[in-house]
Length: 75
Image (cartoon, rainbow, N blue to C red; front, side, top):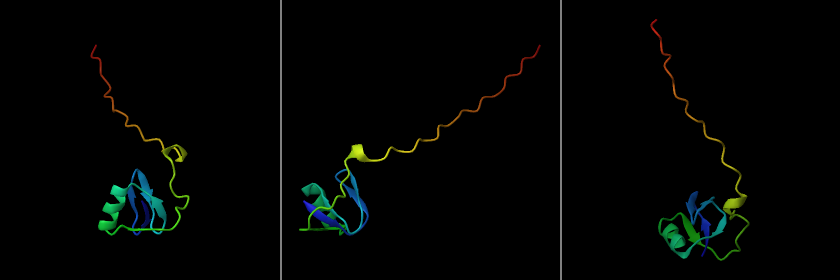
């Protein structure tokens, strides 16, 4: 179902931006309309839906380093 996003939200695995038209599942559309986050639209879907493969890669996450206590040899 085609909807127009009234608030920034997400549905059907994609982020939705205010004012843009998206094609989402009927179930998600009904939920978003009831929540007043979207309205049903008859406009053509803009090139907003980005398949997962075309998304830019996620930035690398900082790995946590473990602190190692220095062992003291008593000789």
